[in-house]
Amino acid sequence: MIAWFWRIFKQVKLQSFINAMSGIIRVGLDFAFIWATKLAIDIATGNISTASFLPQPTTLFGAGVLLISIMALQLALGYLGRWIAALLGVEAQNRMQRYIFEHLLRSEWTGIEQRHSGDVLNRLVSDSSTVVSVVTDTIPQALAVLVRLVCAFFFLFSMDAMLAVSVTVILPVFILLSRLYIHKMRAITRKVRQTDSRVQATLQESVQHRLVLKTLERVPLLVTSLSNLQATLRQQVRRRTLFSSTSNLVLNVGFGAAYLFTFLWSVNRLAGGAITFGMMTAFIQLCGQIQGPFRELTRFIPAIISSFTAAERLLELEEAPLEEDGEPIRFKDGAGIRLTDVTFSYDNYSRKILNHVTYDFAPGSMTAILGETGAGKTTLLRLVLALLKPHEGVIEIYDAEGTRAVPVSARTRCNFVYVPQGNSLFSGTLRWNLQMGKPDATDEEIYEALRLACADFVKSLPDGLGTLIGEGGAGLSEGQAQRIAIARALLRQGSILLLDEATSALDQQTEKKLIANLNEHHRQLVVKPTIIFITHRPAVVEYCSQVITLTKCSAS
Image (tube, rainbow, N blue to C red; front, side, top):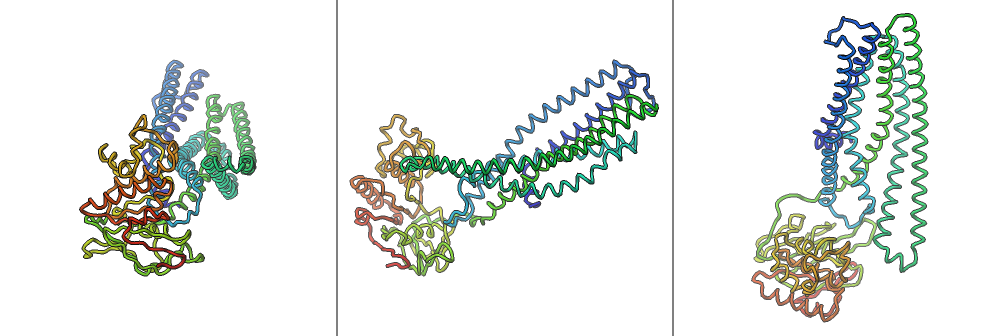
């Protein structure tokens, strides 16, 4: 975890350095203010000492100008520091989120999601923010606090060694209590974060499936479930707050005792003529400067504990191995797919989804895959796309001449055009959704793809390609959304087209026209793509040159 934090620090070291230096300079200005205050009081009481290694004013006017100058520098530093920290802080958090986000998207897909998407989002947003805040803000502040503690001790020690030692005897007690405190708080904080993720997951699922909740009349059930989770979260936060407050109370009693001791010690020495009134004021301020770091550390500890909990949760996301990286392996003149003795199951304890399947999808062929639910049709496409890896056997992509063949991987995915079953549109404009297939597509290319996909209805929309759609294609019917997804796929250049129940939401007439368009387009191409349909529709089968049927744990 320390190595992980170090890697994160290297990404945000500029802001961390600026915040640390800003804190240290602020410490220097605070001590300069204490010195100037003592000097002004000594001048006013006639106890000024000329023995000083620093140039100093000898009049009240000069001391006042010095105090005002120091205060002005403190204000300017605070303003500038907050401004820079805000700008760099946003960039640091964005960089952290992008890093985790990219890792998630580039990691291997298992087909079995172990974490709820709400929990993943909670980690991406809240946990990454917590980690960045600690690395860029809390730790630099803690460094400045330690500098303040050391400087205050030696400043006070130079004036009264006995008082300095007496005030800092709380340090061993603080260290002992903090170790017990950290262990307990870390466990409580992790429970709070877990419950918070469950609350977000419930909110996300309920909003996403509110239509289902309405039709099943289960809105009260979800509201009650959310209330119970919130009650658990409230109880955990209450427990954490009670523990933290009690710990702080114990420390504050010690701080109060040390402050009272300093005051009585100073009064006694002032009455005996051993110190000046200016020195007494400095003693009291320096006592605060010594105790202040301890108070700050009690505030930093919960943040640091939260960061370790957040880091653990982010590290869990990074445990997923990344896909193979490297230059794409592209087959420009057509390609086929060959499965040889392929066996696959989603885990070691479930039944085999595919069992010793061997088949050759020849370059330029059109194949329909039929089969009952659970026979492995969609799984087969995921294996071909290298989203999943077969437990046994080999899946290869080869060129039209049959002279070159390589195992499928993330690097061969550039040859595939895939239309998954269900609505796969993003919120945004229709143009943006379509250009995900080809970012530099012209309007002419887009409208041709829409024509082939029987999605000419886009032209009749008031805003055309600029039409905004909501989450999950809201604003379009299922059939319209499906045709937009097909058009998007047709814009992507690839040697192999995979259609997974891509016409399931279309009426028979529209489906026949779409398949006829695809067939005509296929015949006109010089380099014909290999097309694989997963379907239950007879209209699709009629146009295919070959048909295979999958059954559970077998293939024919």
